[in-house]
Amino acid sequence: MPDFLEGHLLMNQSPVDFYPQSQRRKITSLVNQYGILYTIEVVTYYDNKNEAKKVKQMLKSLKGFLPGFVFEKDVTYLQFLNRVHDQEIELRKKGLWDIPHPWLNIFIPKSRITDFDNGVFRNILLKRNFTSSTALVYPLLRSKWDERMSAVIPAEEVFYLVGFLDASADNWEAFDNKNKDILQFCVNAGIKFKQYLGHHATKEEWIIHFGSKWNTFQQRKTRFDPRMILSPGQRIFNY
Image (cartoon, rainbow, N blue to C red; front, side, top):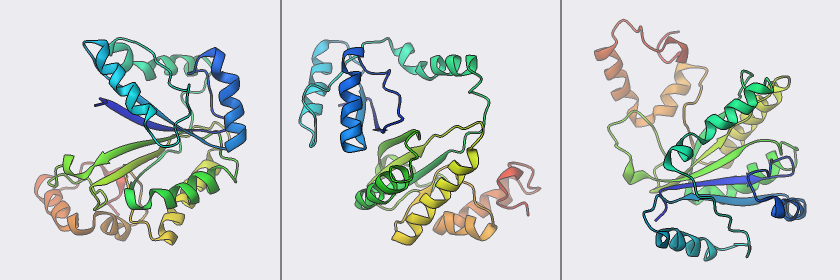
């Protein structure tokens, strides 16, 4: 089984330098043809090549798989863990690191991911030309989460963390408004989503967010931070 699994949307402004030079023109052509390509990054920590071969065979069995589009890269464990730092170095050289990052991370139940795809990926992103957005998708299992934690997740066993990791030096408001439209779409469509590391403007919105966990969360706050010193910026209790 894979040790790491990440879905990624390729659109017409997405960088393709991660892929082999010989395949980039073909990949760009497919993006132009379909609008969106759904890619999967799979990582396996292995002691022998047989484990990597099993993952490769699994990928080929997936619905919608395009033959010839499995690309392999062998790196050390440290290189994998440190992969974002290499990007940071390049972005800092270009002055594109310390700029606004209007990110949105939300949990979507499996039963509604197709509705989310049609309404957000293929409508808000594609039709409104937010095709430079970095959109990542991670499958998660509810049974792997500890119910005693304050984190709030969908009720279904399988759900997805969908992350929109945008950055913009001069047009961050457009991405911020896009994120609000995504949340509003979910509300209008009746998708029982939850924000991860989200922002809520009022205490009432926080109560809705925590749902049945609100009373427990409030009791813990009273017990461990009675003077309400910690995390005032989230404005959950400090109004």
